[in-house]
Length: 359
Ligand SMILES: NC(=O)c1ccc[n+]([C@@H]2O[C@H](COP(=O)([O-])OP(=O)(O)OC[C@H]3O[C@@H](n4cnc5c(N)ncnc54)[C@H](O)[C@@H]3O)[C@@H](O)[C@H]2O)c1
Image (cartoon, rainbow, N blue to C red; front, side, top):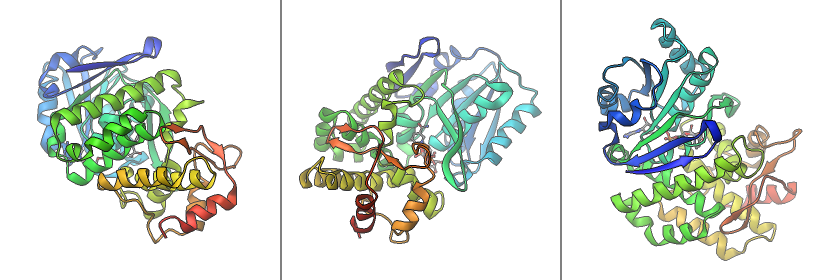
């Protein structure tokens, strides 16, 4: 097992990464302040891992909420189902919420934990590659609004993150690739050495080579933990984690939540961001080709959906948390391995990317 730390003063917490961690009750129990625990999960993950999770909470007063699966259910209604379960059991301020699942469950359960009685302890047990390398670390929690992704949320840190890499054995290939988009993102935004490693090892990751996966998860979490420690509430460098996300969120909202997986939308968005960075003269054709090639090799889509034209993109991109006073701002690439902070971009160049790239 590897243990990393997110250094946030009194809100610091460990990230445990390793095989079979769900079978080690001591790990999770050390982070539970009281006797009441509600596990939030979904209908896909529950049959696979809920029993194991509850067994590791033996001796506690436990309950569970099993939500419908998918991004379309990352809503206030689902958060309300969590509040209902907490109140029905008369769970109090010391009750902990455990998120067992992918990023949808983690974001939603974290949001519920931030709100319930103004904040109860929260633990992340991520079961997808994407959630183990990105969403479970850093305390961003949210639900979606029909008009925009993650528009209702809070910064709320977990007490610990328990990433049992054995859970990835049951993850569908398409979801594994979606997780790789966020892994590759660290290479593009700040870690050129990791980028070179990924270019040499992406096939091993697709084949689920345990050693390669363990390395990629650990290196991703190190990157994420460093960024979060430097800028917890995204007033600066944390925004670089949004490379490709403004385009990607427009795809997710525009196509309807769940049609394009989050990681897939981010992959396409990173290609669009690379194309725009080239138009600004910051990177060259070779670098754009490297971005596209690596994502393709990870079996990710690299061109935007035909259904969304430039105007549709612009309409959805206008609803983004990085925008200031209504002005669109994007994270782009200064070089391969270095992202910019959000920048205002020339409207003509942005339209050129939206109309020409991948069309
Ligand atoms: N908070 C953050 O910082 C942050 C960062 C990145 C992404 N996100 C959010 O994360 C979400 C995407 O997360 P995701 O890709 O994990 O999607 P997800 O939670 O929808 O999980 C993907 C699919 O895999 C299933 N699943 C989960 N674990 C499984 C397992 N072990 N075996 C088999 N199936 C399993 C899920 O039920 C679902 O069908 C998006 O809502 C995105 O906005 C948040």
